[in-house]
Amino acid sequence: SNSSYWSYEAYQNEIRREDSFSIIAKSNNQTVGFLVARMIQAENCAELYNIGVSIYFRRKKIGAKLLKSLVKYCLENSLEKIFLEVRE
Image 1 (cartoon, rainbow, N blue to C red):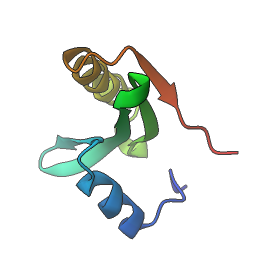
Image 2: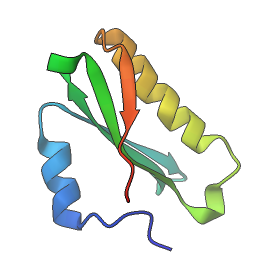
Image 3: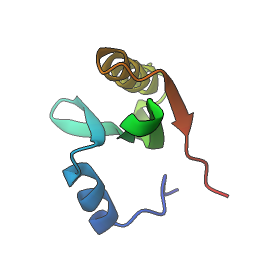
Image 4: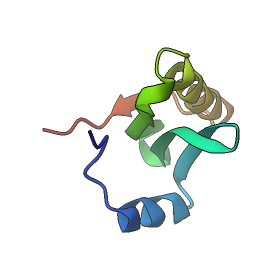
């Protein structure tokens, strides 16, 4: 199943933004997970847009490590909250 309705172009446009935070998890040079968020400085927060881990690499704490990277980035940039963007 596809983890997102975002197009390739939508991801490219988002990660090029200066206020975007994105990270990729790799195992043996293979992408196994990713996270995309945006910093909203005016509201002192971040918004988590998407996080995904390959079905073959789940239950290995990859998602937790991706989230910890976002939390660390937010702390380093004095952002107090992280909101989850939920698809309806």
